[in-house]
Image (cartoon, rainbow, N blue to C red; front, top):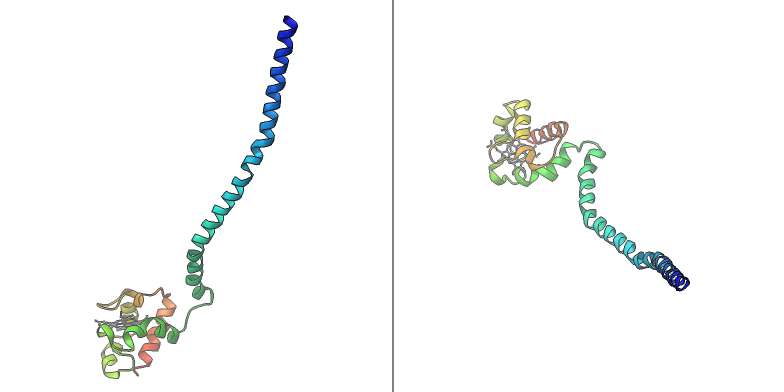
Length: 145
Ligand code: HEC
């Protein structure tokens, strides 16, 4: 009897060990697909944030290539209003419209562009450095001289 009990508990132990061993082998296989799935999700996240990252790079690009010159800034930012006189903006090259403004002096004009004035948003609504503002104000006033 005692021997029988002993052998049946041996069988149980062997069964248990075999079950644990089997799980140790089977479980990692069961998860093989999952890490790949997770990697796929990470790729999804990468592709979803990618346009944002590219946009940040595009924004950073002008700074990386140095300040833009007055003509470039005028054409890309200021011309929207100052080429046509939209929103009551003094038209570029219109000497009569610019004479009284130029008479205020460069610091006053630079201040108007930096901080905005009435219908003109600060920096013309763009992201400009102080040097860029100086060169574009010089460019726009030179057009009316
Ligand atoms: C959304 C339209 C708009 C944009 C964009 C814009 N301006 Fe203006 N700007 C105006 C208007 C309107 C005025 C007249 C403001 C007033 O005196 O009431 C003005 C006035 C000015 C003046 C005269 C300011 C003064 O004190 O008399 C300067 C200089 C000037 N703009 C330069 C620029 C430059 C440089 C840019 C580009 C970086 C620019 N503007 C972009 C609308 C614009």
